[in-house]
Length: 80
Image (tube, rainbow, N blue to C red; front, side):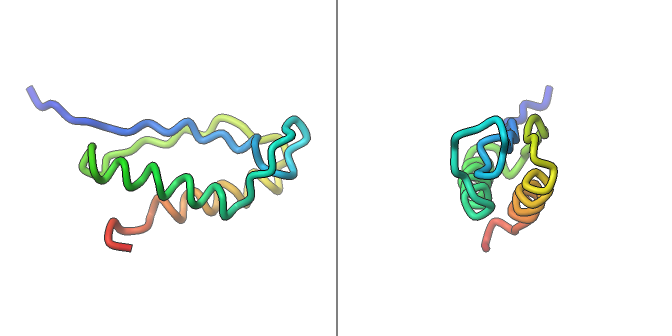
């Protein structure tokens, strides 16, 4: 039996500053930094194995921009 660790990300973008259902002020740079933190955790504890699930965001332009930086950050190599 192969035992493997994986980090699951619940990628919710409704805390974005332009989201109509949130009073939070997270920017694209904030989402990129949060993603980098989780990516580093995954590299340290799960050999880089991650699954990211899109769950929320109600301003479609803000969602697109936030998701773009999230995916770009996920694609960064561990040495960057």
